[in-house]
Image: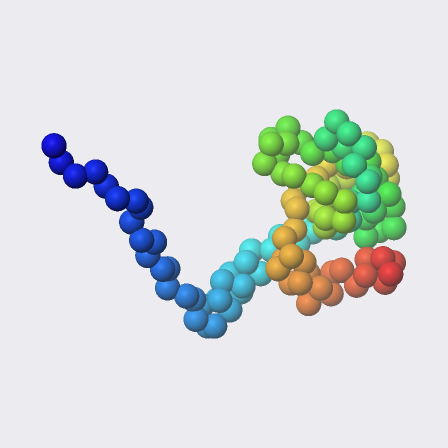
Length: 125
């Protein structure tokens, strides 16, 4: 009979990324930040209502009841305070809309640098 393995193999340390490589990763994420197109607006989730719906305060000053479309339901988890890209409905555009995208913290920084989140910052605090 052969020998039994004694414990796990030691973990190989992954090489640490240099500062330049980390900066490149940040630039890569910022480069792919979707911005509002057409009638899309940026908003902040204020309250989850249930049934994949939530109240969102949008950049145009309106509060909309937004839903997560079926294709994104299982992939998109939204909490209060998240920054979202909203597409208002054609009918009742002032009251309702669909969530198109959820921004990550690095992407939010990119939006602030572009000047797209200034109005939300002033209203928030």
